[in-house]
Length: 322
Image 1 (cartoon, rainbow, N blue to C red):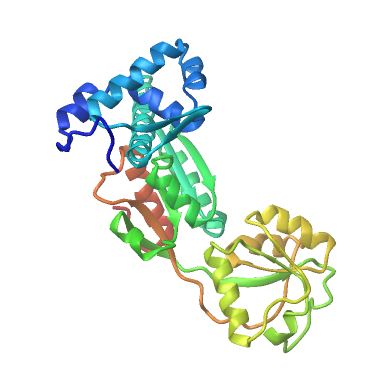
Image 2: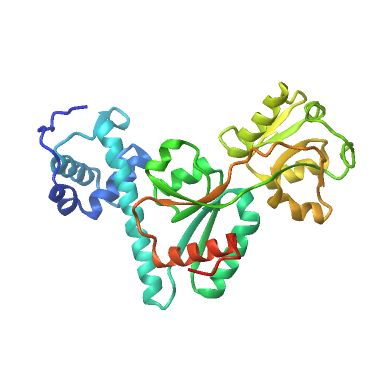
């Protein structure tokens, strides 16, 4: 896409780095959120003409029009969308630098943001966090639990430092590195009152007549569930509730006859505590392994590297720490 400011010349490193300042990035980030110059100006405590001048400076520096001006707001064009993503990532990196610098300056050990799928969080992540806290008691840790597709997006945006999960598309291997950590078994579970509790010689076809709680379609667990039902030529027929929340699923199973396919590592403790019951049915071993995913060709921070070392040791206790 071309614009009236475009000269056709390639953007130089001096233009992109030396002339774009923090205020430029801040305005771009706010325009990305609001799509409105007046609102962005107010959040920066500027007059609208001053914000307009900053935007004009940005477009002059980049020699390209970034936004289409509309009667009510602004719409980024293709170059604008690309630039907004850069501004968001650059500011996130600067905020992280300031936070970690201040923590280290005050004698701390920095910050670490970890994303994890639900199943792995039940055992491996918990054990690793306990150990890293023992080794680095002042480390500030943020845990974000979500499905792999959302975690990959956050990793690309630098909202998290690393993730424990899976690739959701083969093209992601060009942007991220993957290191296998463990396999994950699945189990059909239900509430303690469920009529199938304690049944014998159950077949998969018998389960399709019951209502199900399923993970969203974009998750690995749901894909495996669909494959399992597909192998029988059947599908759930009595109603389905989709949710990524295990706690909501747990509550729902307490008061209904719904079944759910869940990671065994996640539900084991609830079965042992008498909150859930396993439904004895043989399942095909189709669940893919999960692993450590980091940004490719980007060295981890000291805090992230320390956690990765612990994570590897917890995933394979027989190995000596690196």
